[in-house]
Image (cartoon, rainbow, N blue to C red; front, side, top):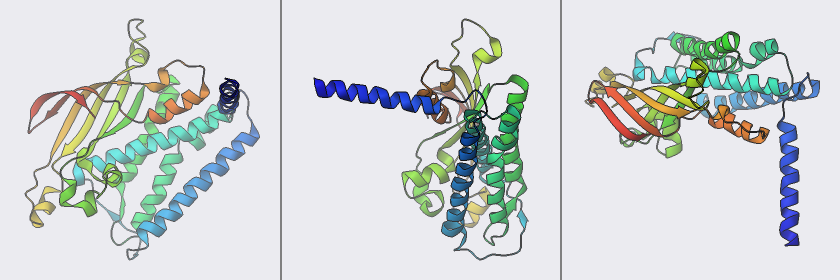
Length: 297
């Protein structure tokens, strides 16, 4: 009993220290802000170096050039860029908020973090003979950042949140080198199983006391039957690919709107608010028409 009591006390003390650490500063804490900037530069710098060594070094380099890949993969890759820049920018802004930095600094140097990072990746692509920089990717990157910044300026809150969900498909086994050989690879590479959402917080728009503050309505976009970037490329390689777009309507939860005094839980909710929860869903596409799903993810 004494041991259990000591463990409970230690756990409570540890959680209290963590909660204190995660509590945003009311005024500018220069030490915290310095840690944020050093941490961001370090993590993103190491990520870019690793990406360059593990991905680009195996392909020949060439003069910087652009390509037009806007018709490939039914723009699912562009949706991924939009999603990524929004959330990397959101995390950057929230980290500066934690340090007590001003709203202006949060938006100028935090929310633009995702756009800056993925722009550097585009430069890497531009010097690679295998790929090339894409104006479509850059526009998608800018759009993700713009969605975050515009909502902060207009409403001082995020009422519309990009989210992601994934399910495994049968397509990856036909081209595992492109669509992924393992589950972890397929999450990133198999566009057939990816769905990107815009999740709208109903209470924020209506201010109705009858609507829970955490309840969202989500509109999703996906595509199916893709082995190559375009149908014509697939046919040239001997596959009868007839890809099609899919649209979804579903319920969702805004985890950041769940009330809690724990800043640890608030941090956890912020991270997992990137993911769309499984829920009843209406699906529409040209191949199946309107279709109801009891649970879709």
